[in-house]
Amino acid sequence: MRLEGRQVKFRAPFLTAGRSNVIRLGGSRGSLHLQETALVAEGELVRFRYFGVEWLFRRALSEWTTVTIPYARITSVGYRRSRVLGLLLMLAIAVAAAASVTMYLVADDTWKGLLAAAPSAIVVAVLGGLTLLNRRSYHVAFRGKDGRSRVLAFVVRTKRLRRPFLDTLAAHRTAAARHGTPPAVIGVNR
Amino acid sequence: MKLLDKSLTERTASADQLLRDLGYRGDSTKVTAAPARSTVGKRQEPLQRRLARSVRRRGWLVAACVLLYILPGGLVAGSLMLGGFALFFAGQSVDRMRTHRKLRSYGLTAAAMIVLGLAQVWALTLAFGLTWDLNVFHLIDSPQSRARATQTVSPPLPRSSTPLNRRPPPTAASPWAAFLSATGIVRIAMSIVLPLVGCAAYAGWRRARREQALWEVALRHDAGDDRFLEVMRGMVDTRTEDVGFHLRYAELLFARGDYAAAAVEAQLVLDQDQYHFNGNLLLANAYASLGLWEDCLTVCHDYLQVTKYSFEFRELRQQCFRRLCDA
Image 1 (cartoon, rainbow over the protein chains, first blue to last red):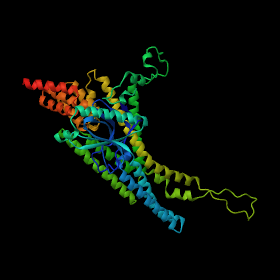
Image 2 (spheres, rainbow over the protein chains, first blue to last red):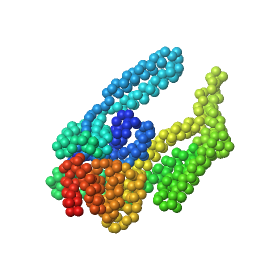
Image 3 (cartoon, each protein chain N blue to C red):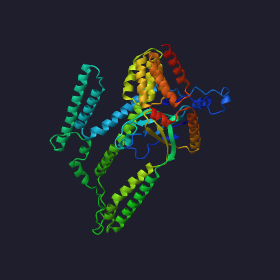
């Protein structure tokens, strides 16, 4: 089974600046292959990291590459987002929005009110952007040859392909579990 | 069919898929009975020429973006900065394996530092008004042009107007003022849009160069021409993460009989993608060709721990066992 660029989009999991175990494939030009031996992700890998600024010029700093994830090394597959973080963000947005409205209403002049409300409005906009980044996506966690855990995150855009994709992946994983060594054991051995 | 866009490991999955790629949408069992497509239509440009044109066009676009971004802000300072960057790049690109080239590299880097320093000094003296530089935006936005912009354009009063209705009509901003504001908007737009356009053009240029190199390899491989190997080597040095391209280079080295170099390149491929099937297989085969049976056995054993059903590695492992027993 193969998911092409218009059907899949790679996403770096939220707040990846400090995490070195995230596969930093980005954008919608890649593809995902469920081959007999492994899940192969192909796309543009961001080569540098600089506090997240690199994502503004992602394509210029990226290189076309592949990442092979044998089914036997996959430790978990999830469709999730950070709920606690999402809740905290929503709370922060509510507080900032309330502060912004209060500042505007308390001020005696319209312009002064707008000026006073602007900083918290900017905070609301930034937090809103962060909330959008915290969207649901598939997280495939696997163990590398060095034993370290790594995460590949992506969104299957075409809804009708989500179930077949997960079913095929589960079938391959079951087959690999019958014939392969469990990932944790391999990680310790290495 | 955009075959060059595809991964080197990716194959057309089925005959149906191949027919779809070729543009056939009907029943696959009746494909031979389908009428042939007319070939009288527009003549297509050869792929090689199309790729060359794409590389050239994107290269020019990148150069134009860089020039438009740096030069309008100061011709001398911008030129010095560009020159410094070019020298630095040239200095770092030199192969430093030989002594005289190493010296050349150091010299170019030192020259780059001096030129970049000069660009900074020039900008500093410019800030204090000690020197002059050709700045397009400053020319447009000079004090004279500002004074000209403050002149308002008033329509002439009608003769019949009485003192009561002789109030001056609303004054329109002069066209020069409108031009100045438009220039300001263009300047802001340039500072935002040009880097984005430049980045996209640069990424496209790299991608087109990759496709061009792969195409030339496909053309020249059988002709026994080794020049493309040099070109590929240069590209591999700047594209270490490109697993597909790197693997192709390693496979070509293997096909030429340079097993040691192929093993090194395959190992580098596996640094990027540890479980790459073809990369591991190439490494194992290179070790086997070099007679390093124990290393070959290790590679096979490691991969079979992950995928026990890979018969290629199992076969190779059997060979290793036999050779080691014979020895």
